[in-house]
Image (cartoon, rainbow over all chains, first blue to last red; front, side):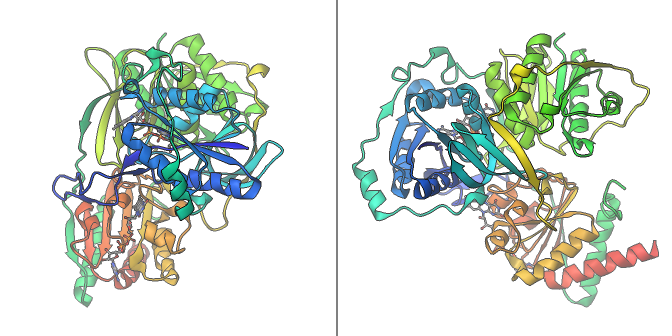
Length: 272
Length: 332
Ligand SMILES: Cc1cc2nc3c(=O)[nH]c(=O)nc-3n(C[C@H](O)[C@H](O)[C@H](O)COP(=O)(O)OP(=O)(O)OC[C@H]3O[C@@H](n4cnc5c(N)ncnc54)[C@H](O)[C@@H]3O)c2cc1C
Ligand SMILES: Cc1cc2nc3c(=O)[nH]c(=O)nc-3n(C[C@H](O)[C@H](O)[C@H](O)COP(=O)(O)OP(=O)(O)OC[C@H]3O[C@@H](n4cnc5c(N)ncnc54)[C@H](O)[C@@H]3O)c2cc1C
């Protein structure tokens, strides 16, 4: 069984603070990390490896510095890594990103399972996964929350959708995206770290992938970001102290008046 | 020709709310462009009256593809139906909900028809001189708003955040056309199948669809206190949400988590109780219409983000809210 896990390098967000006036993020460092939701994809792949035996390859498309996230994934226990890096890839939207990833996955065949995170915390589209499946003409299991069995080329598990947990069955090879519920990601091990240190990660460029030039990077992307703005998030709160018996009663009463005025207090919900 | 399309969604009780929200979006765009608005509705056997509801809510044309093999939303057959319709009728715009359905199927279609797709839009407009669709969406955890165009590919595709706009009022006198298309056997695909659905008992998961969400955080102190939260949510006919701290402690299950690594929601009212308002939490509620904070710390981030904040002890405030709501309801 061969599992490929595409992972993305994203800016670290746990060390950011909100600028209370502008509502923008202030980053103390410039550290790049594995997309936190991709750790769950790595974990699911490694769990399958523990359970039924598998080779797990990680893959990232990104600048030279992105090699760091591949090393981290290997330190967690992944067996192999490939770095997709080329100036020509820069500025790719999800359509073009998924094209390059799909070429690399073809190169790694035979592949039984492609496991991704639900979405990246920066671009935040969640589109790359279904798009990879589409390029490869493979079935897609999005929002997978648990795997019950992988046997005889069939995956059975549950998807987390609006209505609840949907029990599904899917023939391999397939592409899946996992949600956080699949299980807490493990920590890197010393042995893994050592192996990652000595492992020579191959870099694949557009030429090596025999990529169609007109599908790459900014030029090959159907979408264009034309404007970036910061949303106004500060809402000028009415702040009311609510302690001491009188002020508690009056504060709560003010809150309820406020909600009532907005039609938010109706019994049986706001539709009534 | 080159109409504006929306992908309607259906569930157990017929059409879902998102279908009507999309029609409201689509109607505005179609009117600006002077073209027709069409709805595509795929499923396993929809009542024909439902197609007319789409027309009453703004659609001019309804493309209906119904077949027992389409009972469950399955990515490949649904994508093939949509791809076929796109090739046959060449719409210029296709909108779907940023739901698990829309987010699964539209990207699959985008690759097949070689066009761009913008995720989770909260604003859509037509650019005056070019007629291009301007698609605005929050990104980087809601910290920026990006406006995106698909200048050279058609259809311009976007998923739209649920509850980010209101449906139009139904107008039963509107007329329209219902066009049925047959599902071709070659489009079927048996590699993926839906076996069943499990709804966790007493633990509704759909905080994205709720008008009112009451969320609790570490300030609740222990699991037994979550009932205070549940009571208020129940009283307001809302749902219960939670911060990651509350979920990690096992006070609420993961489907209730609001924020960067949980759900992004846009309720009419969000009440954050004992939640500090870390950036990762705020990322999930930036488009809420109204935010109320209940916190003992006036300096908490969520207080700055709120429309209304009560500063005090939640263990005093929550029971008092309950008491006063009940009192008001009795006397009204
Ligand atoms: C502000 C902003 C808004 C954007 N909006 C859009 C948009 O609406 N539509 C659009 O097409 N593009 C958009 N983009 C471009 C998009 O962010 C990039 O194409 C990005 O490379 C992939 O998209 P994502 O971050 O949304 O990943 P997602 O689709 O959210 O990622 C899903 C999964 O795919 C895998 N994955 C994603 N990227 C990589 C990678 N580089 N290498 C390996 N695995 C990967 C990971 O497993 C990840 O968990 C936007 C970019 C910016 C800066
Ligand atoms: C990559 C990443 C992703 C993350 N994703 C998420 C996410 O999706 N969602 C999320 O929520 N967090 C997320 N976090 C965690 C986030 O950074 C915070 O740690 C978390 O949101 C804090 O939860 P909290 O507000 O409940 O707890 P705290 O920050 O501890 O806040 C508790 C609040 O309760 C108040 N309080 C205490 N006692 C009382 C009382 N008696 N009455 C009234 N108020 C009281 C305190 O004043 C305080 O403001 C993420 C973090 C990282 C690094």
